[in-house]
Image (cartoon, rainbow, N blue to C red; front, side, top):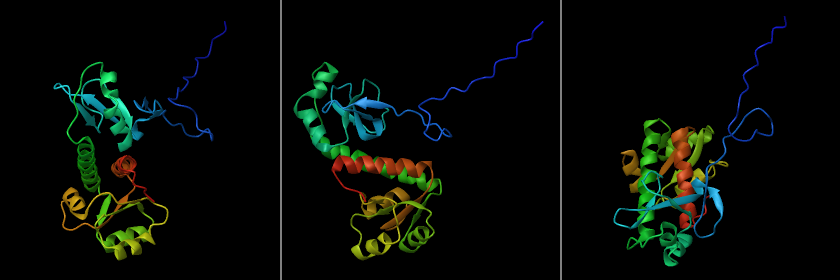
Length: 216
């Protein structure tokens, strides 16, 4: 009698195999922009939904209930979506808009960035102050340099020479950064490698894209 060998369990990967055959990456979740009709990763778009009062509201964390409507993170495209009634068409209902949609989105971005920066600090991934930031940059242990938008130019230039190829992010004021970190004046800040730092950088890039700020 022939005994059949049990079949080996095959591993099924989510996403396409990487070119080197060693690692596998999950497929990105994508959504379609109401304005351009282009399909993009979610981290390049802003989700909107309709509140119980029938008002279109931004949902940066993608957590509010209801059907999501997506627009590329670009203030001009958001303005187009409002002006051409594209949200109403997508919702199949009459809707209203905040008085200052642009101002609301910017304030929500700042609050979200402050929250993510605070989480990164709790995880031990943040250093602040010129000397500590410079030391982290010299050791090549930083993944991004966060400079206050209202900081002095000479300090920024000195650290800029040390940062190498990591992103330079200038989107929060010194007071906004200090509020997030629960510290005094925070002009120069650096983040170390880690999940919370990665989330902050990704959100900073989305905010910069919305405001049309070029990060280097």
